[in-house]
Length: 92
Image (cartoon, rainbow, N blue to C red):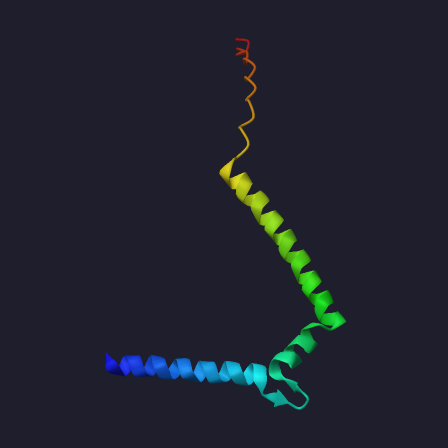
């Protein structure tokens, strides 16, 4: 029980230090967070995000229409009555 507490406390401290390092310690002229923002704010990255969002919207629309078809199937088409068949006797 006490071991689990110290394990969680240690994990929390390590996570806090990693987060502080990510946002505060410079790598070259920028921090890791600033580098990440610079990478994802380039025109190709924005274009890729836009294309991904467009495809995700299209897939969502198609999935919704398919689910609606499964939930609410169209009513069955009315059957046409079969015409009576005349029995023809062969000549004897």
